[in-house]
Length: 135
Image (cartoon, rainbow, N blue to C red; front, side, top):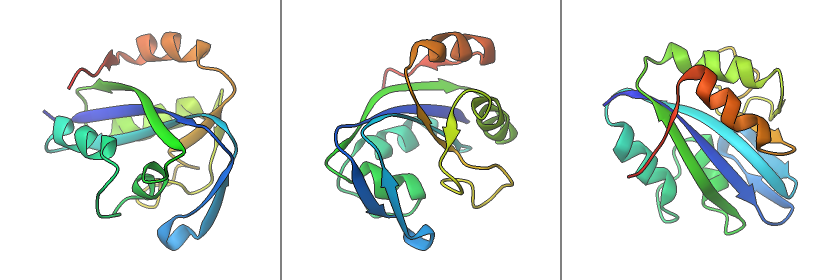
């Protein structure tokens, strides 16, 4: 299945992570939302993100390999790649983008967002038609 996915990430402590070509990025303790896409095998991509030990390829890999970062929820939607950027644009309205993170292949401000609380997330996910991932 191809589609887009959203990872809700909890960072338990303030951290600094070297993120490949982006360089060092600081992350405050709190909640983050990452928007990604998998146009071949969505389930395989999500399961890869959930593993700690992996080769670092995407920006999100650098963050998720840190012991203080944990994926707490995964949502998905069967969709084409353009839906990924549409979801990221919508998140810019209510969340703070981490500049350039996850968006080197598009013109979005970022695909990782810091959020204050996840209460708006349920409504947002319903609006764009996402479901909980149970892989």
